[in-house]
Amino acid sequence: DGTAKHVLSLVASIQKRNLIIMEVKGNLVKRERMEVLHRFPLPHFRKVAWVMVGQPSDGYRDHALARLLKEKQDRANYEWQSRKTERARQRLVEDIGRQASQAARRKSEEDKEYT
Image (cartoon, rainbow, N blue to C red; front, side, top):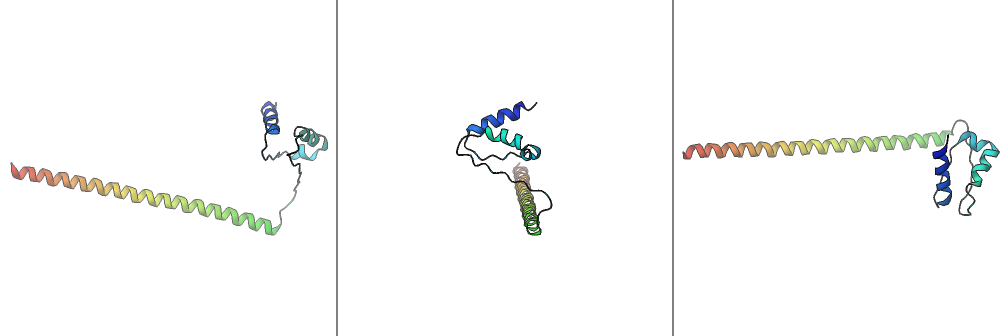
C-alpha cells in the first residue's frame, strides 16, 4: 500500500539531508521519476540520476573486494582480540579465586593450630 513509504518521502522532502531513492523501475520510467522529483522542489536538493547496469570494471571489482576483505579481516582481528582479552580476564578471575581459597585454607589451618 506504500503509506509508510509515502510518509517517509514527505518527511525527507522537508529536511536538509542526503537521500538516495533506490527504485530501479521508478527511476527508469520518466513519468515516475518526475513524480518523485516533484516531491523535492526546494533548491538545496541536487537531483542526480545514475543508472548502472552490467558487470563492474575489473579495477572497481578489485577495489571492492579488497575493501570487503579488509573489513572482514578487521572484524576477525577485533573478535580475536576480544576473545583473547576475555580469556585473560577469566584467568585473572580464576587466579584471584584460587588465591582467595588458598588464603582461606591457610587461615583455617592456622586457626586449627591455635585451638
